[in-house]
Length: 283
Image (cartoon, rainbow, N blue to C red; front, side, top):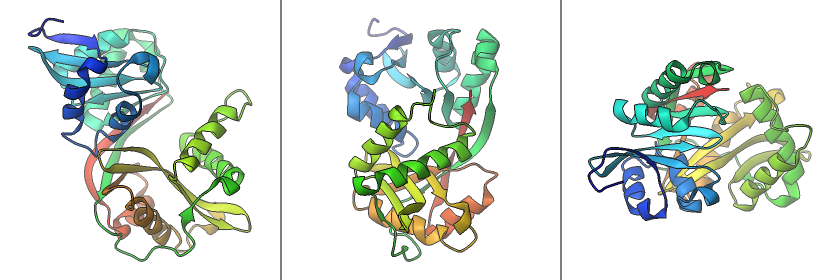
């Protein structure tokens, strides 16, 4: 691409400076892609997928991560049109996720342009408030909330499978092989980013930091055993997660379905404030 050209191309490590500058404009909103770039750079063979950049008169103005999750960054109408063509009619992702206006516009145009391969979905979560907290939790942490180590990996894995199945509607164990998901769970544990409360050897509360970059740690996988729900455990448990996670990250973020008022109330009690809105398209 010539220095003044407008359009889409696949990025590589020569673009790292411009990509980091773009992602740094909103560290909370962009934490997923920023974490991937921080860990693997921009070479597709290392990332396992391409990241496309849209250039306007030679300046990088938006991105699109094309992996298991398709994630737009700072995408406007022009860049979305470019990304629609780059993504092609062959869908390989399991979701489109990102700032609500961008994710929904991208899905709409992909469906219009390529038809059923992008249009037929399993579920649409069109409003997911994004929340953040950059100070100590507003309530005392639960005294039993701890980082999970490998000695409790099996119990944490069992809780993670239950969480994923309840939240997404399908099991994370594909084809009866627990290996890939177990490997992922072990990686989170080994990074010191898995948190939980144990009772008689079982993990009854769990959450983890799924993406981390630019001083932001994004909480995901929040789950409380149904037996313990309604007992006032969720608020101090999340406060404990924030307290421990802030030993490493300045800001803790998450996003939650708009219809889950109980969870939103929990996060507000801990001190989280809404700072944006995400959307997720599930295939």
